[in-house]
Amino acid sequence: MFESLSTRIQDVFKSLRGEVRLTSDLVEAALREIRLALLEADVNFKVVKAFIDRVRDRAMDQAVLRSLTPGQQVIKIVRDELLALFGNTEGGLRQDAPAPRVVLLLGLQGSGKTTTSGKLGKWLMRQGRHPLMVSTDVRRPAAIEQLSVLGQQAEIRVHAPDTMDPVARARGAVAEAKATGFDTVIVDTAGRLHIDEELMSELQTIKDAVRPFDMLYVADATTGQDAIKSAGEFNRRVGVTGVVLTKLDGDARGGAALSVVSVVGVPIAFVGSGERLDDLELFHPDRIVSRMLGMGDVLSLIEKAEQAIDQDEAEQLGERLRKNEFTFDDFRNQLKTLRRMGPLESVLGMIPGLGNLKQLADNRPDEKQMGRVEAIICSMTPDERRDHTVMNGSRRRRIAVGSGTSVEEVNRLLKQFTEMRRVLQVIGQGGMPGIGGMAKGMKLPKMPPGLRPGSGPGGYAVDSGRKRKKGGPWGLIKTR
Image (cartoon, rainbow, N blue to C red):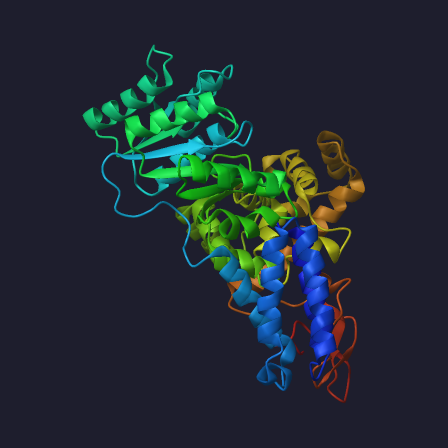
């Protein structure tokens, strides 16, 4: 999401950081690059023009030009104006809805309305709500069956009457919700073009019958400005209270998200960032902007971790770390937990400074590598996973054959596991880990006083002025 736009904007900021003073020429050059980046990201050209004008007016202020940190001032201005593009409202559903709350999902064909219905139902369940779903798409083959399957996967009740009348199906779902105590009804409508008068009239009839409190337009982010134009037309014809942007994980540009609030005039409620039922997020403008500017999104990372990590397992792992009992079984469980948090690149993008990790190293970790690591661990016997020191040449060859990998990959994993175990042992004891093998390929900081290049952990050794003594990690120097 916003991959190319984020990269271009961050490159502009890097060029400004080296300047002691800003000039009008530097500001114009930076704005030119930002303008091109926004247009290439498929942001509406009218939105881009207004955005650049506002940034220019604020950046050319004399207080900014004479500031000791002009680059930081410009970053702040761009951040404020990007937040203004998204509006001041937070994502999610509107407050103070009557019971049962009726949510109507509408949009074009293929935008992901049915899948979004299941995701929204799962999200509501995490909020302590009790949703009921119903499909009024009687034209698309297997649309009703698709929603039924999603309901089974998410353990959500699906209203399934015998009638194939869309209005009767929606009205029946609301009646069932009132009779059985469901507090939310999610109505999945048929995909339609805003120029299709028959379908638009049907949508208006459904709206009049169930009186939805939320009218969410589901827009495919990969279609760019076409989705925004259609959302504006739907808003004019039947009214829209919010937008759900789907397939943001497959769109590196993200211009639709930056344009929708200004063009359509309604807030973004949710964003879909994956294919799983859990991959529906509340739209937080400040978090999205932080990711775009390379500042990370720690709050979203914490929320994903809380959903994926079992508290009891975490406490047991902490106790094992303190006792230096971290095994390959624990390592495999941590890989599974990381996968439950979503795509690896998405998780890395939430960590400050790692948003563009894939451009910093060609050998970055990816899903395939994680799968190979898991295959190697699964090919080990229970005894080998509990005690990695029993590994010999024949065991490593057997594991390589069983996992479809090479002996070199098995050896590499064992070496990395040993290093990780050493670092975790130090952390578990309340110390600071040494840099050791983790510093390969990285620029090392200047050596502190008393250290010089050597063969100790991290490549340093204690220089006592007398006999050379090998040292441990910084702050944990061992002498004998």
